[in-house]
Length: 101
Image (cartoon, rainbow, N blue to C red; front, side, top):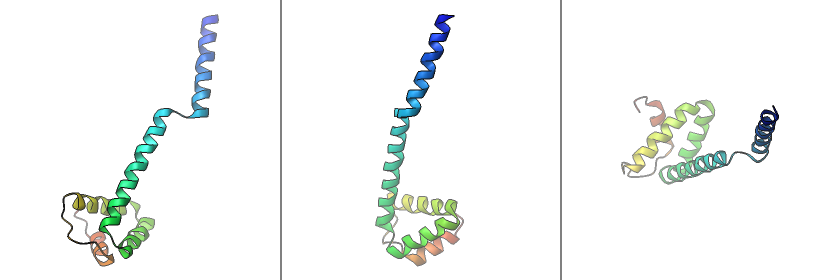
């Protein structure tokens, strides 16, 4: 019985320490998400002018899932070299009205 109690105390203490200091794997996941977000923002800054970024930000307030789809579409186009110039507000408005992406 003493072994069972000792094991229960060890598990409880381990859980307390993990809750207090956080799980190291969780920090790595957060860092990876942060790097991915920075990369997305960097690509979008290269392919969108200021008015287009503002339009996308406004769209994000109303339709976040649609904004994510437009961003993914633009990033994919940029990666494959299909963008010859920066997107402006008009092109973003046309793009968010298309449902075929």
